[in-house]
Amino acid sequence: MLPIRKIKTRITDLFGIKFPIVQGGMIWTSGWKLAVAVSKAGGLGLIGAGSMTPELLQEHIRKAKRVWDGPLGVNIPLMRGDVEELIRVTIETGIKTVFSSAGNPGKYTELLHENGIIVTHVVPSLKLGLKAEARGVDAIVGEGTEAGGHNGFEEIPTFPLIQRLADHIKIPIIAAGGIRDGRGLAASIALGADGAQVGTRFACSVESSTSEEYKKAIVNSTEPATSLVLRRLVPTRILNGAVASELKKIEAAGVEVAELDKARGVGRARKGLFLGDFEEGYMEAGEIAGDIASILSADEIVQDIVTGYCKTIGSFPLPLE
Ligand SMILES: Cc1cc2nc3c(=O)[nH]c(=O)nc-3n(C[C@H](O)[C@H](O)[C@H](O)COP(=O)(O)O)c2cc1C
Image (tube, rainbow, N blue to C red; front, side):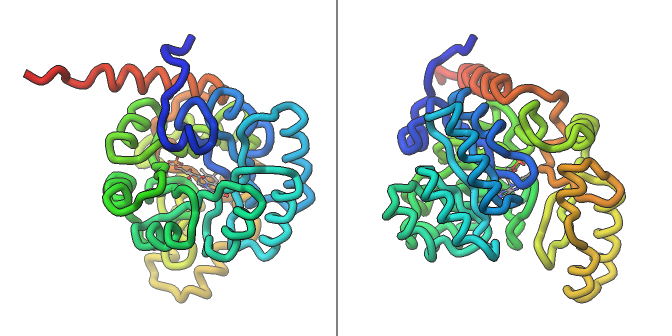
């Protein structure tokens, strides 16, 4: 039983959701099942288009819409070669919320707005946050370097990033990177954000389409759980293990970027996340992986975050003497 029915912030108003909790769009992880489960629980679920063909994205959106007609979004990494196709499918299927990442939001925001779509862009720094705001997006996700998956080159941690964004940006801000429970949500709001985007914890949920091996590796991980690898190419946070060690060694040897690209390989995120191959594949995950102890349903995770948030704000030492 939840202690409250709603936590009202600018992002719950923007997306028409009950709680300011966004499930980050994630390759090989957040298909329609996870996104719908999070949205049904009162957060905002995002289908991750990053690992989908336009046809597969269409199928996932259709399946989601068959069982759910409430808030739901799609994450589109803008560096994809077929980004225009992904956007076309998103518009045609009637999705009204897009989270764009990894690219220039200016190029597509107008088109998305013309189709009645709310646009949120993921940024790793104030500089890119100001750019996204100037290009007209409706909200931003400030993602610190603790986060799983691709990171910015700037390597700015979540705490300074969110305070900095809150000091200079007027549109709603969603904090991401290192947020697992109600304490993280309370901290995000205390820092000036309007809500939190949670990735790794949902990647380790029952409805996540990642392999059982990946989920177990998260549960079994301890500090330091992850490493930021490929820092000069595409900084990527992955679980520690053979692949992380191999990449760190190559990088420390100061090889050329082309050599790093070769070492990065092809299809390794799929191998790690989807097929559970810990020897060959990357297991993208945030540092908070080291504190995730069980595989819960998306509904249980949302309930835990909301309950923990109430407990946290109730524990603040007030009234002041
Ligand atoms: C397995 C995995 C895959 C991810 N894939 C994407 C992606 O395709 N697009 C994107 O914008 N962010 C991606 N992310 C980042 C998440 O959306 C989210 O911002 C991040 O995980 C938040 O930090 P946390 O992992 O500490 O919760 C991914 C993260 C993980 C763990």
